Amino acid sequence: MRQLQALVAIAEEGTFSAAASRICLSQPALSLLVKQLEEVLALKLFHRTTRKVELTPAGHELLQTARRVLGEIDEGLSQLHDYADCRRGRVTVAALPSLASGLLAEAVASFRREFPNVRVVIRDGVADAVVASLKTGEADFALGFALPGEDDLVATTLLMDTLVAVARKGLFRATRKELAWADLAKHPLIAMARDTSIRRLTDTAFGQLGLDPLPAYEVSFMTTALALVENGEGNAVLPSSALPTVMPEALQRLALHTPRVQRQICILERKGRQRSPAAAQMIAHLLTLAAEGRGA
Image (cartoon, rainbow, N blue to C red; front, side, top):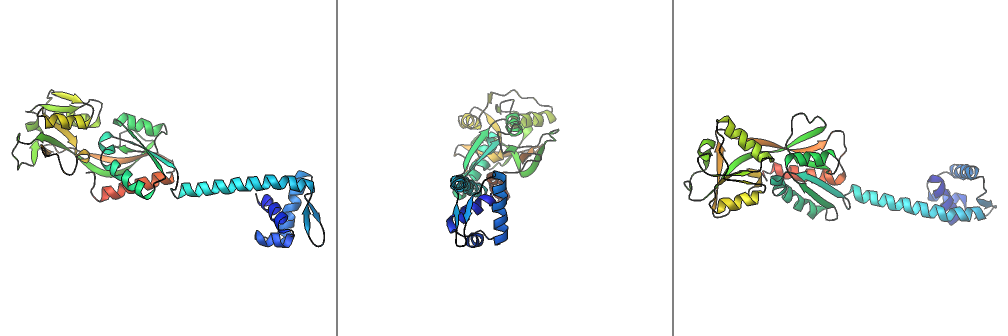
């Protein structure tokens, strides 16, 4: 690259001294670059006189290539700077649906305000699908929870998520703020599908009490669960991170206790992989929002 720069500078400046000054080299160093290039090509590139330097036919031929190559390098470096500064690029995040619709959605909005030219792709799915997207390289990072035995993943704690009950107003006292799992089991239950992390935690909590209530409904989407609760079909167990700060008028949110069930939500990354600039910025937005208590 330096030899091509030397060729272009000499051709445009007309003298070795002016060219050396332009590319910040000593004149002997510039002469050595030209000599090395001519030896590699086995061609003379310049006619030298006491007053000026002119290109040979071979020099003219190489000059066109040199300008094109240097232009492409400059363009490539410019694009790389844009990538490093998040003026372009893409970030793909795999996330549990409860996080994709809550904290992640808020982080994406904040990220896009700062980096509008970076494309954001969200792969939302159950826990196993989220981890699979990360391991195959489809996702830059994932939002989920650390699973035992996943030694090839690195987990950074994002927030503690708590399971809560959602009931239709009027079923319990309006002033009531908490509900025991044993009391919840006495009413029709709208459960999440068996392949979801929420269902696994729900079944575990009931199992600790020796209970195994038969769900009135099993659903895959939390919006469906909320709609069924709103229509009086039962109560749902959902993560606090997925619920709006202001609940719909017809619904009541109750903290579940005995036991109190929490899950550690993490940023999951493949071990030994460097974050892309866009991924690093998105993670920074997520950590900021989590620190502010959003999404929990």
